[in-house]
Image (cartoon, rainbow, N blue to C red; front, top):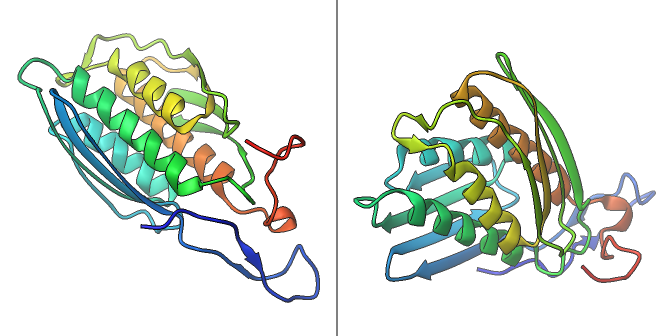
Length: 218
């Protein structure tokens, strides 16, 4: 699979309305440890097709939210020591997904870079702001009222996003504006993350051949 080099602007009347083409932003990353075996393939320019088999049903459900609302084609295959608990598999899926994002983005030429979204889900309201800055950071502001949703430990939501942010070199802020239902809060978070990431990874036709930084590098 090839990661993006840079988009190529085609001829047009002006830069804001030009059609442009670029190499498919596709990446595959595998990670094998003594605890887990994870493989992630993603296409940032997909249509939202998802196949997630992690052994953790709630995590699979959340990965489908990322794919569907981010319009990312996503295939995640994972096995792990879930007979102990879900922690290692959950974290390593986040690590591998983050590495695949970084690989697919390549040098990050042409991307919008910043993304933000506020997603409602019934009474829950969650805000995401992110920056593919090259500087990993997570500010996490969820207050999830229950310890579990089904069999899923809700502490693992933070661990997942720590892993994604660190390995994609993303600055990520998660803020809960409202919500009392744990499932709603978490799902609103993943939906808002997907839409913010979709915004940030889209190609900006006004600078499709340059890196979106005054420093010239991310």
